Length: 335
Ligand code: ATP
Ligand code: MG
Ligand code: FE
Image (cartoon, rainbow, N blue to C red):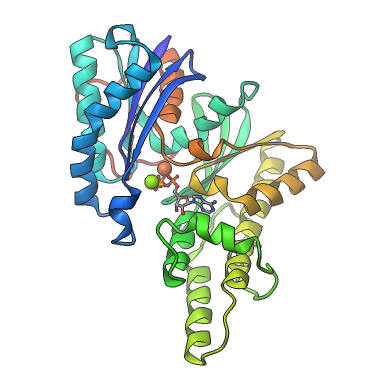
């Protein structure tokens, strides 16, 4: 069974072909990062225009690399939310056209569910149930994945997402966009205990997160050090900030594992590539006798292979969309 999928929710134009749900035949990702870098973030109108230019060449390349034609494809999956409306619409319109022309099912995929399903492409043995920690550019959430099509939202951030906090702190530290990987790199030679930043809601007993207070605390620290013309160690700031994020993520994830009575944890989204998050969760899960999974770096950030994997399990369940499928910019995760 071959599934073609498209992903255009933000600043990556991507198309992929996967076989039998878990084997990647091709995963073409055209990143617009260099285009948006000079603005320090994604410019929605610029992103939509670039998706229009890129989408068909990227689909062609995905088919070519997989050594198949459209005639070999059984269904077409597409991200319909959450994301930038103009960007999403490019993928949705293209997928509808392909589905109509080839008379194959159209499958609307939730981008965040896609991030979780990236793990199935990297770990052949992985099956639900598990707890997923979704930490991406725009979202932070804990999800109880009971089976392939039952995803229960346990809690999410009240304000900023984890990735957003990384990117904003990086920006004031004059690091290139997106800043997450740069903070990660700097933090490796810093002291995580050099500065104490707040761990919001850590004893709240809920699965809610909040990172906006942490962001302000770090900004205040940097600004007052600059004002007093004190020496500032970017490595220590990065390590201490990252520690505050990671400590809360790890504590809440381990609590969720206990409450859901599962034996597996899965990381998803761009921040899942963070080395300290992986390391600290590795320690905690090992102590608790729980297995930890995370995708390879390329599959942590946006790509169409993860969308194809999610689409496959919806395909098996007969969850098809029709040609009324629309982009839903604030599509919610789970039930
Ligand atoms: P969403 O999936 O919520 O719609 P998005 O698609 O923009 O948002 P992703 O592609 O999942 O987000 O991830 C991008 C984010 O991951 C950016 O904020 C980036 O800084 C962050 N990121 C990538 N690598 C790392 C890392 N090693 N450490 C911390 N953050 C990272
Ligand atoms: Mg991106
Ligand atoms: Fe994403």
